[in-house]
Every structure is written in C-alpha cells, then in structure tokens.
Length: 528
Image (cartoon, rainbow, N blue to C red; front, side):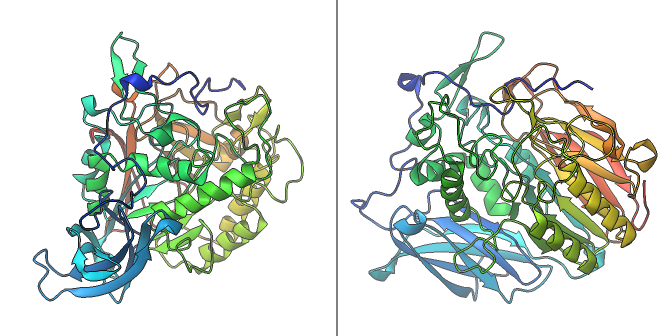
C-alpha cells in the first residue's frame, strides 16, 4: 500500500500576509470589547444552543462589554408569559462569553428563546435582545430524529469570502431544519493564518475577511479566542447557530496540526515562540470551552472533558469521542502493544460502559478521526501516522490494537446499531467494514461515513488499511490537493432515523444540499 502523504492537506499555509488588501470589519466586531464603549451591551456574535436534551439545554452568548446574561424562553415567538433565567456575569475572565443552562423544559417541543445583556451596574439597562429557537429531544419514538454532521472550517487559508456570500453551506444545512448539528472537529484552524487574498487556478482571486488574530498562528489565549471569534463574523453561521443546536467535538486544528500530548515543536518551526504543545493545548481548550456550549466543559462542570454521551431519545445516543487529549505520540504505529492508543485507557473503558448502558436503537460513535483511512503525519518529513491506520493490512498494530479491543467488546456484548461518523480528511465517503475481508476478524460488520469540509481545502482520498476489512462503497474527492471552496468539494452529511420503522438513512450531500449517496440501515441487523 502506498504511504504517500497528503501534500499540504493538514499543513499550515506559509508566506507573508497581504495586509494592505484586507477587508475591513465593522468597528468593534473583530476585536475584544472596548471599555470606553457607550450605550447598552450588545450581542454582536449571535447566540448558540448546545448539548440539548429532553428537558434541558445550554444557551451561549458573547457581549461587547461586561454584562449580566439573561435568557427568556417561551412556547411561541410572541414571548407571552416568558420564563426568565438569570445567567452569569460576563467579563474578561471568559472573554465576555458565557452559557446559561436551561432545565425543566417540555420534551419534544420547539423552544423560543431570547438573550438579553444587562448593564451589571444598572439591570434596567439592557441591550437589544437576540432571539433563537431549538427543539428539545422527544421521548416519543414515533417523532424520529434527523441531524447533520461535518467539520473543518476556514482551513488552508480559505476564510470568509464576501464575494461568494461567506459560509454558504450553513444556509443549505439550515433549510433542512435538523434537530441538531454534530461538528466533528477542526472548528477553527488556529495554525492557519488567513491572508487577504489567495490566487485561484483560473487566475481569479479569492478574497478573505481578515482580523488581527488570524494574521499568524495562534499561541496566546487572546489569539485562540480570536480564531473562534473569526468564524462568528459570518452571518450564515450566526443564523444557523440561532436555529440549530450543536454537539461539538474537537480535533487537531483547534490547537496545531497533528498535535499530541507532550509534543515539543521543532526549533525549525519559527512561526512558534511557544514550543510546548501542552501549554498551547491548555490555552486552546480554555478558548474552546468559552466559545461553545458544551455541558462537560462549562464553568462548574465536574467532568472537565470533551468526551460525553448525548441521549437523543429512544432511537439515538451520540457518543462523542476525544481522540486528541489522551493519545500517544504519533509514530510509525507498528508496535505490538499499545495500552494508551488513541483514546487512552480511561476513555476506552468509559465508552465500553456507556455503550453497554445504552438502550437506544442506534448508537452513533462520533469520532474526530477515521478508523481505516491512512492519515500520515508528514509535517516534518517523519514516517509517522496521525490516525488509527498505518497502511499495514495485517494483524492490528499500534493504535489499531485499541480499536480491535473495542470492536471485539461490541461483538461479544451483542451491542447493536453502532454507526461511526467522522470528518477530518476533507472529502466525503462511505466505508463498510467486514470481517470476511479483514486480517482481524473478531468483530461484527459496521459502517463508517465521512463528510466535510465545511469551508476548507479539499483533498484526494487516501489509501485504506485492510486490517478491519474496509470497502470504500462511495467516495467523492478531488484529484488535486487543496482545492478551494470555489472549486467545490465541500460536504455535509445527514442522518434520518424513521420513528416508525426505526430505519437509519444516511445521505452524503454537497455544499448546496444535493444528495450524492444514500444508504438505509435496518435496526437490529448486523453487517448490512
């Protein structure tokens, strides 16, 4: 099998920034709050909801100055007889962002909410309310579940292009009105500066909105915060956030390309003055927790982790993995023993327990990296590997040993309805894993579906590793590397679970919503 690396797919773009050509932003929108501002607090970055359950959910907002967060909910958009929730005081400690947990909500109902920001010294002085809506999880099987997933936003220097209407893919997703959106990682490219322009193959020019924090790789907490804030400059994304709840996980580009704990950045990478990945990851994790409504990362949460399970009613549980925080170092990945693997022992045991506890018909395993696709770590010319597979089609080695343990466990505990979803590799595909094709055979057949990017460079599909017997049933990917969003190849996926039959249908879609591939899976069956 070819070990040819993906040239530049996960690498940071280099070169000087054409600051003189930068697009200007509305005053104050791209920067940290200014304390000299007059008037009332404003929520210029929109609102979000996340980790919504049957009777609860998190609401997020960011203020342009110190403010008290207040949330009101109602059954209709008229907001008659609203219920009021007193939220946190937003200040510099959280970059003026915060979340409020709503609880005691009616299950399976559309909730209308509005966020008000009040002057902390005069609660009567509130800014213009910002409204949103979401549906709580239904406890009735007949209601079904429908959600979308994708990943990889503003990668390879392809940022918000006003000439193209910004991140238009979010409008296409909003039209489907899903119950929630699963973002499978690379929510930002902290290691990818965004310049004012990039040349396109046809001789035209791609223009980016730019900000100060996106002019270099992120190292400081302020720069990481600025990376998350950058994407919220896009009106399409803000509208989507106000309509669709999110389930968010992270991958590598929230910190740095292909990072792993304990890594020390090579001295030859002069973009970084801070060489400790652990220091950078701590700053990135803090900014990540400030800019997304995540139940296990919000202030006061006991768990303090990304991996979690979200119960979505009798039909679906979503198991969100963290394949970054606990992994071992990237290496040739050919060791015959690997107790740490890509999940770490504690997370692996957690996943086993939660899978056993699940009574849902379908168990979606949200992985931030694929299982059988070879993803080299060629950033510094090393023959190392970044994901699970390393291209050896024989018996499990390296991180494959941990996945083999998990797949064996799922088989012997007779856990049905597992489906793997991921992004990361900047194309869309469907892989079926079958023991009869595999070197390791002690598992039941399953499907893995790949989508993305949302707005980033697209790349050719890499090699498959035969250890778990994958067959690529469908793929759409460019033949060239780093194809811009203007060239197409931007994708998202849809999962639709029927409330009557329990059938799970996956649709792989292009950026305009066009369906490329459809597969329907039957509940309770194995190896479909």
